Amino acid sequence: MLYGLIGRPLGHSFSKRFFDNLFEEQSIEAHYELFELASIEELSSLLIRENLQGLNVTSPYKEEVLAFADYLSPSVEKLGASNVLKIERTSEGKPLIKAYNTDVIGFQKSLEEENGLKNALILGTGGAARSVALALEHRGVQSIFVSRTPELNSRGDSSIISINYEEVEAYLPKIDLLVNATPIGFKAEECPKLPYHLLSSQHLVYDLIYNPQETLLLKRARLQGARTKNGLAMLHLQALSAWEIWHT
Ligand code: NAP
Image 1 (cartoon, rainbow, N blue to C red):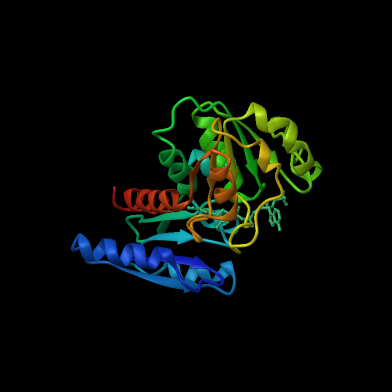
Image 2: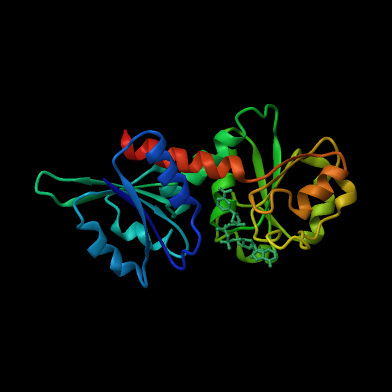
């Protein structure tokens, strides 16, 4: 059995290490390869490999990959993006592609033990931010996006509310969850521009970044008395969900 990751560039991949370890620990006869595709058209020649059972999908193909799918999960339909493909075969051996989004499942499961969350601010409006919003919607938490350009983000959808960073001050006292879904924090000295003095023990501050383990955002939030969480649990849970999808 063959599994793998498509994207460009791929560099060091968490997924390869994760699945190589999983296959070894569970004595599963499978291997996991990195497929760095120059364009999404190259996916066609990959899909005809008969032993290919599943693919993880990363940037920049999470949206383009939908053109190859025969089935979209409800989350994928809503988000217009997929990070996991399951490949089945028809009786004639033709590939049948099912598209899922395990970022939604991973984030949702990572918050399972948190009760009572009601209102969230999500920094960023990319794929991860939208997955987080959908996961929160599933458990009845209201989300507002924080964007550098909120006027560009509603896409005509009145259910999507976006504010700019200057407006955060007015919202922070009314929320209990703040999620960073931007790349700000990969560099140890960077953090989102926020009124940190307004963070307190009423807040859970969740950074999707897992390296560094404690971003400057999380450190500053912790020093204000907020509870903090990094993206490591979500990373593992979304990968485990991919495996559950592939082998069930
Ligand atoms: P993305 O598509 O690049 O989107 C990031 C969003 O952040 C953008 O839509 C943008 O929103 C905002 N942004 C970008 N550059 C910024 C800057 N210089 N200053 C302020 N805001 C900026 O990324 P993504 O795929 O959604 O991923 C976001 C983060 O989540 C990344 O750090 C990624 O590694 C992490 N992630 C973690 C997991 C996990 O399992 N832990 C899973 C998925 C993603 P505006 O333009 O509206 O401001």
